[in-house]
Image 1 (cartoon, rainbow, N blue to C red):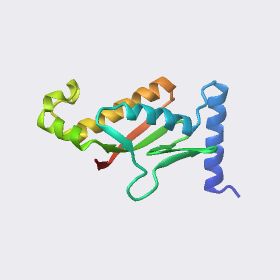
Image 2: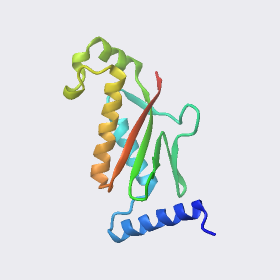
Image 3: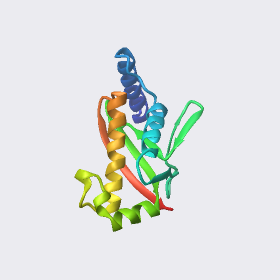
Image 4: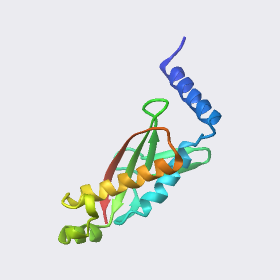
Length: 145
């Protein structure tokens, strides 16, 4: 009997085989680690959060990355969920001096501008890693410190 879990496992393994044959196989943990490094460079990001209600992490062979969830809505697409902790001082400074927000993001509410900077960082990682398709980037601002 072909259960949905078996079909999902088969789809995932066939996607991995296609990626390996193309020479582009990356584990979810590798993607999450590269994403974590990029997000930590975004101004105003202090840390990544384990999530507010459910553990937000990506797990692999003996490793895990807290605050970044890599998922695959379809076998050939990757979605990324980020749980960030922002600097209260930084966000207040942007609120008081909105002219400090980068060009295209100017005029947006502060938290939306910072979330968009995080999304842009994730998209740069996806291009660098040559991910075939990025289904979406969800940014959760879990805390201000």
